[in-house]
Image 1 (cartoon, rainbow, N blue to C red):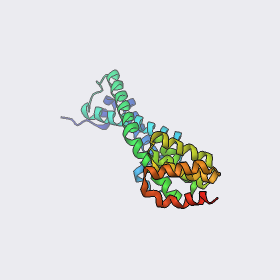
Image 2 (image 1 turned 30 degrees about the horizontal axis):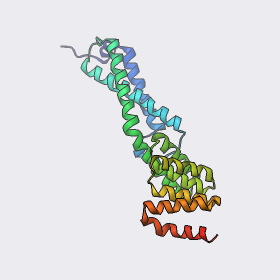
Image 3 (image 1 turned 120 degrees about the vertical axis):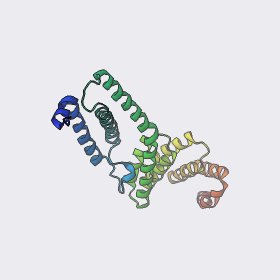
Image 4 (image 1 turned 90 degrees about the vertical axis):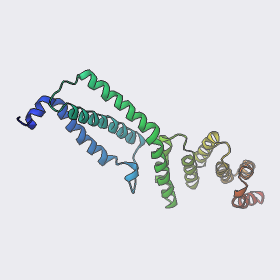
Length: 226
């Protein structure tokens, strides 16, 4: 029995589909180079969120093509009898499945990654880059209240008190009993010279979490002694 040569296999499988697979694999390599997995990055390059999202969705499409084409070639090694309609439906279904997985499973993890990276940048006093990283964190997961609060800290450190208040308010809207959010907003009001609102928020924070009273007492005394 004659062995199937590469040329015969290439011709029988379909030059267009093989070429598509080759292009998809090459595209996956490029996507990996320009947007490596977040968990493998030691020093995340801050890119605009639309770019990151586009790269994610590009990876979904390319990955779907690769998976389906590999399965098809293994299942039908010497024939291209798989109908084009069936092929399209399977690729489309896999794209939808992977997109849902990206949005609901991977995105919250990416949000946590960029939040942690933003925190590390703020520890280095690189507040602008920290804010950019935290911007990405909240866009990947709009309910990441820790990222919002960390961004509020950084805005306050940069003197952008209005932006800090907006982020504190977002956190309080989502989690009304988050003591740190009231503490942050209270100190921001203090920086703006609004002593009444500052005291209200600091006392509210203490009423929610009495353990932070020692941290806030000095601010409360400073406000009362003004």
